[in-house]
Length: 84
Ligand SMILES: [Zn+2]
Image (cartoon, rainbow, N blue to C red; front, side, top):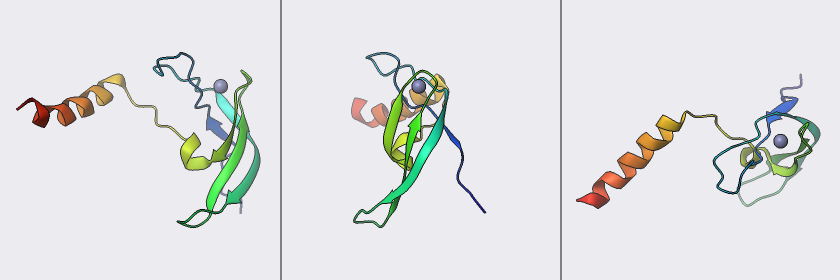
């Protein structure tokens, strides 16, 4: 059984500040493994309808769509000890 997904959300940034991601479904065109010190890494080559393409480990190309407020909350927690 093939457990791979056929698409990943395109991780390309749409601006230089890194605030906006493409997010379109990028089709997985190729799958392969690369060796690392921690063992083999599942890797893919993906291409989105806008023409962005990436080649690398799945973990590096996968990103979470999180609300902006969640990022702010994490930043607040990390900054709190330094303010004292
Ligand atoms: Zn894209």
